[in-house]
Length: 167
Image (spheres, rainbow, N blue to C red):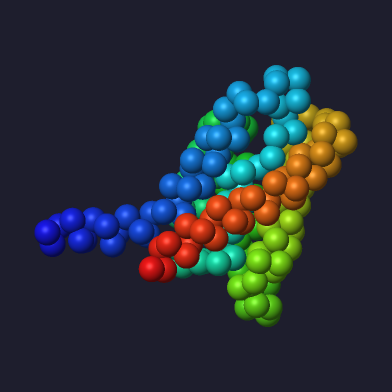
């Protein structure tokens, strides 16, 4: 009985990491036709930013690095691009959280919009510099737009799970 209680208490600490990994895997699944798959919403990144805003102690630096590496491997990016971008996003959001309150849904939405913008900008610039790839920046804009459009759904799903964790 005591072992089960210890396992469940530690499992609660892994919920944000597991949710981010699940949504990252959902992001790369072939639900969307191949021609427009590169503008799919960044579900895993939005989930990660949600947990950074609402429970930063559960979304630690090591969790950020793990999610970034999984994202790099699943998307076929240069190893470390998502890690660097997520570290920058976490640093900026944590600095902003010390100045402003991040508890409301509207603030969470604004932080997610800012975080996704920073992540997309960092990844696009790093891929341009490292891989000498030029992008159709209209696709990057549409990916950002779709991500911000889908973010209320991600916020509500994660808010529900956060409320269940508090009980």
